[in-house]
Image (cartoon, rainbow, N blue to C red; front, side, top):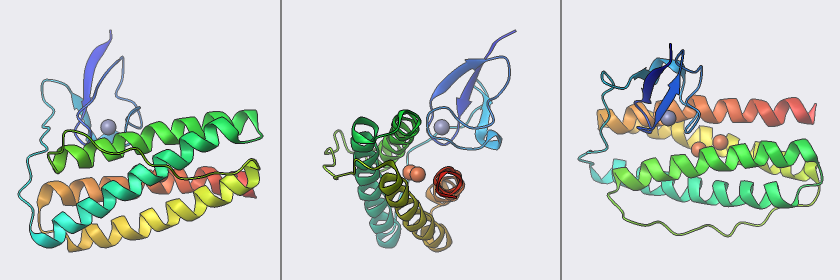
Length: 172
Ligand SMILES: [Fe+2]
Ligand SMILES: [Fe+2]
Ligand SMILES: [Zn+2]
């Protein structure tokens, strides 16, 4: 029997027999996915100056990475690479949307990052971007005073680490 699930990080619903191992939208791990009626979802965070600065920076990182991945999805010279970068672009766009909600913004700008034709160069770029994201999210999670944003920073450290493994495997 299918059930209705909800991710407690991005708030999006999912229909399936079981909770997915990763949220199909933001990539959060299974521990954050609950049956919809039990899931606790909130984007209402009262941020101190430091947390607000970190969330604003996170939004910029995600906008930039989403733009890079969508560019790579269109341009990279590998059929599998196109699919990988499309999937990554969708996840990073979802991350940007989580930060948009925390910051209570109606709209966010689109990024205009460039990408490469060479799939190897795109994988290397992806690897560097994910490494920077992980490093930043770890630091932001440690510094966070607000429990909600701390939880999201921690969840995204795991998601970006999964992304890092995807490029690492392909660059071997
Ligand atoms: Fe992300
Ligand atoms: Fe990522
Ligand atoms: Zn999610």
